Length: 307
Length: 202
Image 1 (cartoon, chains in turn purple, green):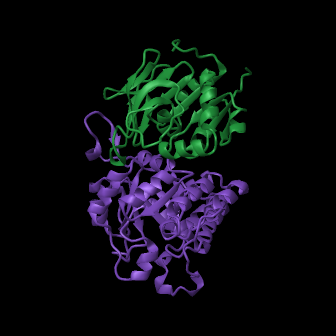
Image 2 (cartoon, each protein chain N blue to C red):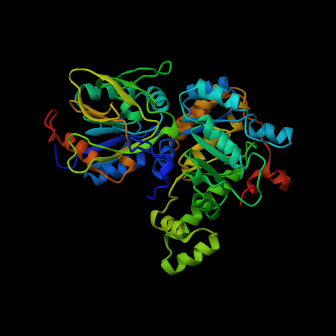
Image 3 (spheres, rainbow over the protein chains, first blue to last red):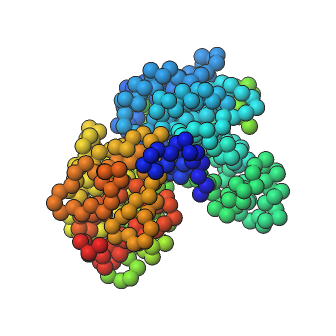
């Protein structure tokens, strides 16, 4: 595995921070788990008690960003620090696409992962942030394999399929994960001649395309995001090949967040055991209402942000 | 025991896949373990890296705490990395409320002792029982061992802190050999499962 170590991150005791292995390895530790959106310390504790492997600190969950409109930005540093203080599990936070100064701020606050996220309003319509410039690892969204590989080429250490955040509707999450998995499966059968053309079609570096063809998977961890609202949704994404799930609005926009959070954790671990998923699905109270994605205007589709 | 022991990887959450690959490379039959009946079928067990609070909660919810403690007391070889090391400690210095461990090693561990993700690092580690070059230590929000009891053998230190230990059939490292492609530490553990690497004989 290549190292992204620069001399400046090398302390005197010859320990190397910010390497590709340390960044990607962090995501490996999250596998099989649920990462939950939280907007304050109290929600973060509920998430941790429910068995979340990490929390995503943000000012408004995507459902509220949709409702409120306006420009969605990085969260208040005070709020992020309160959440870091409140829990011992890793804390992630979102920067706008291409807003590398928000990312610098998040790194200085000590967050464990930065999500360069389409849920916030993009700051740059051409360039994503150079993620190799950071010690803190990045997770980025993708709707297809080419997009995932372009993000990895920019230094992303983890990928999540985008789905359509804040809708409570799993249909787009399924579409994007299936797309990524199908494109990976196709590469498996390609010979070297075909891989050059595939790289051109995917608009991704040949080396990464070749690596995916050999591995039969992305070189980084792949989670699913955007629309998971029930234990069965989470298990569906796992059975489709996601190594874990992000749950945004689905938990704290529901009737009984603590119970639903714990239920989604159980179903994510025992994603292939319908009896356990059935038990986890009992008496959860009201799920978030949800939005039908086919009635969502093009301009309100977050998945179209980023390229 | 025959020459190809069956070694489980506790598959509630964490980097299970990498441990399965490393164990297979070290000539064990590797399989995931999520249920008490699956635990009963293995000769040894790896507790992977992951989030110790999540693993602890799921182990309690799905009835694995007591059966696993019983197997460890009965001498089943167990190896824990990072969160797995925390799960094998008799005591956690700063547990979350209600956080339970399997125990097995008379030690006190400090969670996230080396810092948050920005402080996560790689460093060469000389480890007793692993011949040749130092192992590549990948430390991710890693714990260290604050103190050990008399029966615990310290196998490695980094920066003055204990990062690898063994007590009888229980092995633990703060770092993640499963992420490196170097399978010597898994080889040591598989030898313990075969019964050919006696404690104190390293």
